[in-house]
Length: 268
Image (tube, rainbow, N blue to C red; front, side, top):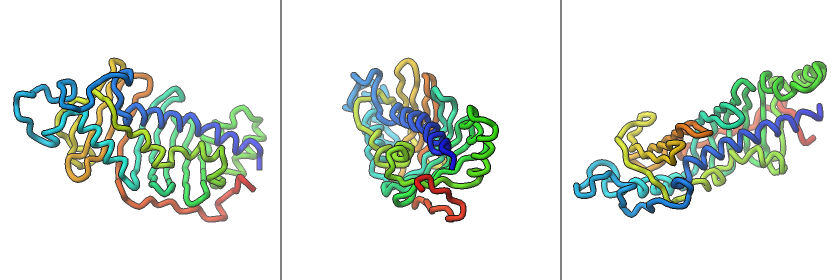
């Protein structure tokens, strides 16, 4: 196997992980501007509806904006699994990801990095599997000779690369697959969330909450029926705008190892 294969794949996933985690942190930690001040959700006017003298009605009527958002974050942390549908942008360019992950460390999905191509990934048990398309392979090997590039294409096109999930480099690639790690970003704390109107997200009733730091605006949508899970986060403006949809809470994650004939073992 070409010595360029594993390093090329690993170099490509790190910026993606950083981008996804940064967006998650921006939207999910619920920090106020600067992360140093704000209302803690005691019902102050910054997080309320602006009508303190009038008895509130509707979903979460007795809670302020910050209290609702912190309640949603706490509920989301209890999920055993979730599917994340992300469309984000950072310094590496536009990225899209569709990942189903659970607290058992199982993960399956696809990641597309602009015009650079698409990577599929599966993590099950102690193994991780990656498969990339031709556009990805050509993009990652653009500095190689045409002969080397064609050799890599011949060897990898349509095949999965298998690696031990405990390998330090692979573990870095799989940070996005660890639900506990992702949910660690869901920290209750100070925020400036303001209640908005009722709406729907994927057919589910939701309450809109908005906060801004002057550079970007984060809008969170919280389920108003059943568990108050986060359903969607939208970040507008700033350096890293994007959208995260939260779907299929607590549903089984289908993460099955590919057929052996389609796998190339990177650790062999």
